[in-house]
Length: 168
Image (tube, rainbow, N blue to C red):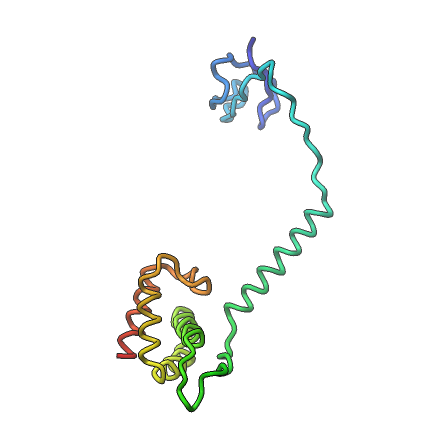
């Protein structure tokens, strides 16, 4: 029994042999490239389709816009974070704070914020040994930190190497 379907372009009814199901062909009327559907099997249950809930789609769209705006705001933040507790005059090493400094420096370099990057590397020099260890760990990692995931890998590796050279 041949497969009957309508061309998406000219809406003409077309018949195709069963063997053509799941393939592409040209409409004999308008020459539009059409997908020939698979023939319906007897044991296949009919799919129950539901209409799209426009309210739910609007709500999802608004949440996606808010997520996008928040992400942009966080990535383009200009202020350097205040010096975290545990890092002060006694030079106590707080590795999490050094990691944040390294991420901030690499982000600033990637975004061409050279003045901010210069200030960040100056702070990192205070904790040189820890910063070098953190940067080496970042260079070996399979996946970059989430804040740096949009930077191409080769560029990120170059920025890390540059930071290590500045700290050495």
